[in-house]
Amino acid sequence: MTNIADYSDQPRYTIKHVSAMTGIKTVTLRAWERRYEVLNPRRADNRYRHYSDRDVAVLHWLKSRLQSGVSISMSVRELLQITDEGNWPGAVAGGPPLSGHRAGATPAQISHLLYQALLRKDEVESDNLLRQSLASFDLITILQDVITPCLVQLGEAWYGKEISIALEHYASAFIRGKLLTLLQSYPNHRNAPYILVGGAPNEQHDIGTIMMAVLLRSQGYRVEYLGTNLPLEDLVDYARDEKPGMIILTATVREAALQLERMQELLKRLRPAPIFGYGGFAFAYDPLLRKRVRGVFLGETLETAVEKITGLLPPAGSKPGS
Ligand code: B12
Image (cartoon, rainbow, N blue to C red):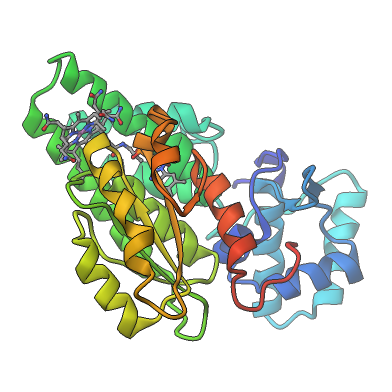
């Protein structure tokens, strides 16, 4: 039988992930930590708690004791008796997966495995790798360090004629589909600050744009993803009725980025005008484009964008992180 001692004690998961993995509310996790000193998650530089696979296995064990009618204080006492003797209880079912050949893999390694699985058109393995990422890393790491490098690698293979256009399209469509499913998996709170996200006119790339939408929904915003190649006049008409607090448009290619020069002017038709934010590969590739487009340049990465957006339009009920 697997023992809790077999699990790694390396900090990996945020409190939100642990809550999703165990079904125990974050408020309960904090209360158990405070009252029973049962777990001692490490604090990262930003003061966020980070839990290990072993912590998650302990929580599954505690939860199974509670389900069999033992009180939390009694369960903790039982656990401490065992650990005081230098042992650990046996792990219960439903805990984190144990040391498969990918356990402990870095985002870069998972990204490469995903690339290989997609080239083999192995959808089960690709799906497993994405699931494993969701259980192991925070969302921003998955988007920036697992999925993006995989797509860039696909692009290079296509550019170098190592793979066909069809295979590259298949792989990017698979990832795009998974991201849209992830987007829909987050609640879209109607009372939260409202953001429209889409791609500039003449733009076909939309994966980075969907990532932006996913991240903002994960932060509690009400986000509508409007697709790409958006006609700006229509968009402004839509915004007149919908009254979003912010509109974010992205561009990967230069010709699309240049279309955004008109946006701030068009928004003058609205009272009050929503904040206009923009970003994407085109602006990172050619920083001079930022001088030509008025509005808020949201930075080169999704991470900087979220920071800027939360400063400009705080998410509903936002409190300092825990
Ligand atoms: C898949 C792909 C396509 C697919 C897109 C499918 C889709 N639904 O998105 C298709 C086949 C349609 C396509 C078409 C074209 N493509 Co293409 N494509 C790619 C590829 C392989 C991957 C793109 C991708 O999704 N990357 C992953 C995403 C997540 O990366 P990203 O968009 O850069 O986003 C990251 C950051 O930029 C940032 N970010 C993204 N959005 C935002 C938004 C904000 C607000 C912020 C702050 C940050 C941010 O965060 C993301 C995460 O790190 C790249 C190769 C590469 N090196 O990227 C080429 C690439 C982007 N394509 C390129 C080109 C040239 C084209 C075409 C012109 C080809 C052609 N001749 O037809 C057309 C474009 C037509 C058009 N007008 O748009 C070039 C672009 C170079 C440039 N800037 O000029 C690239 C770099 C390939 C290359 N090496 O030449 N492409």
